[in-house]
Image 1 (spheres, helix red, strand yellow):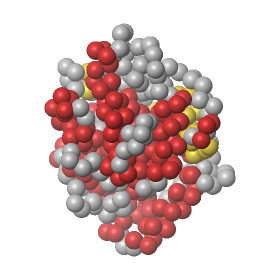
Image 2 (cartoon, one colour):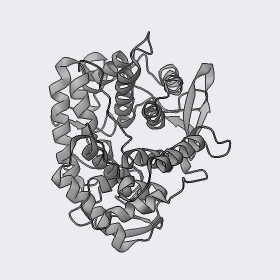
Image 3 (cartoon, helix red, strand yellow):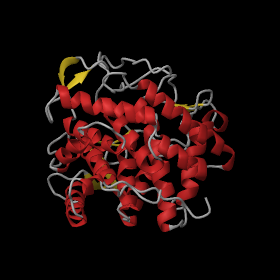
Image 4 (cartoon, one colour):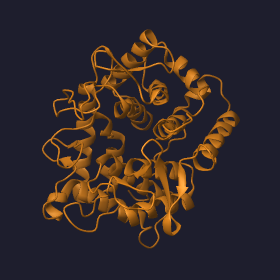
Length: 374
């Protein structure tokens, strides 16, 4: 896309003010002795710690790599990628070619199975790295590595005995985990799939193009017709699925749906049904809540009496939705987000990752990079 929307400019922020805020957040996330969550790992690596759970996750590692490539910091990117490849990448068994979703800071696995949202972010960050910096010797042959990840995502059952693909080929939907026959609406990233359709193995490019179309439809189907909320987990027909003993719909993962709709709009233009969804979401929160005071909800907006674990993330992602929203409150969300500091304390990791991405989006600095010739 030739021009990325800058909503901070619309509320009167200067480029110098945006630069200053971005630099401050980079300092906090990556260097502040008390509040950072990026740390040195073994053997010259680096890892992003989930400060609420004291582990490194493919979600966080891929988020860190995406931050690094957007910031044009190749040294940081390579250290994060090296940790992922050395300590998370599976070399045998039914998960060969996937990444263990959770490991300890020393690289010992907490779990063997993968989380598909990690794989799709890893692949996208690697493609961007190839475009920005070019490819070197393995494992820094970024485009080759990205294509290998995407190949396994679609063809694991054909490549590995006992393996199962992360995408259901019959409907082009991403699975919650490979073993599942249901999804997570926040995993659906049509803006990434549009780029995978240009950069993946040639034989899979039509698959990814169809996945982009199918995911936009699925996201729209997932969002409630009044509140605009999507569920944490959902069946293939978008009916909410309750798991892990939780009788609620809108929490944690689900906040990312609004952010994903925003980035798709920034890169590819608006999809009317998705713009309608985030317009409803902004209106609901504006009319029924106050800033940073949120519950966990059923899709119709009924609070269940359990405080949201990540209220900063709700503000950040709902503000990012202004890129796609037609709500009369859209710029007020941007103003409130601009004045919101990063979260502190043990739950800062998730909120501040999403905060950082939404800062990039709203300043027009979350860019798509494609290797030459693709």
